[in-house]
Length: 196
Image (cartoon, rainbow, N blue to C red; front, top):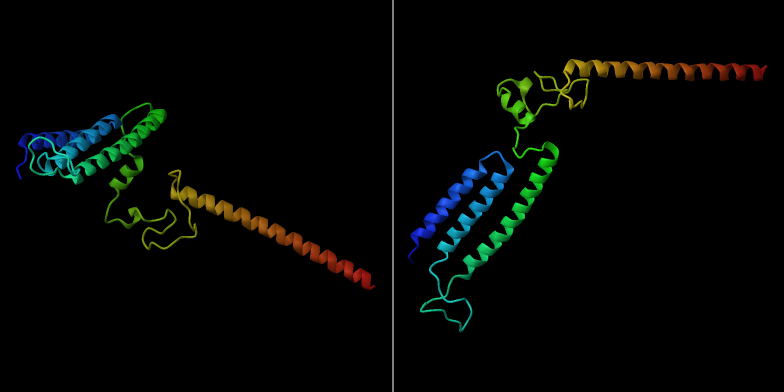
């Protein structure tokens, strides 16, 4: 089997250009890179399918070809075209939603990813799998329980809030117990008066 060098060269150039565009920060360039890369891979599959031949239908001939063309390569290319169209539609939807929120086509760095990248690998207090309420040295849960710090508050502020909530709950519990005790005494006094 001989391969068409021009077709392989074109597939390589398209694939390289597609990968280059995929590495850009704008969504439209990413979409174009995906489409160009897909076309390069489709050309590569077409070149791998062998030389042109007769259609894979019994009794049909075309030109002076001795053999039939490979229908598997054609089916794979058709499937790849459909998948690329679906992924392209998804990326267009992402671009539209991104434009609605930011009115920019560029993909920004994620703030949480930047925080994780700055963490030290050796410091257990900065381990990414720790809950905000875990003790940084032992890793054991603290009295805060499952407190998760969604608003980037300091742990001291969260502990102060927890202590205030605990104090308020304790006061409410003590107040309720005092009321219950007062009702028991009143009932006990009423029972004594009835016995007399």
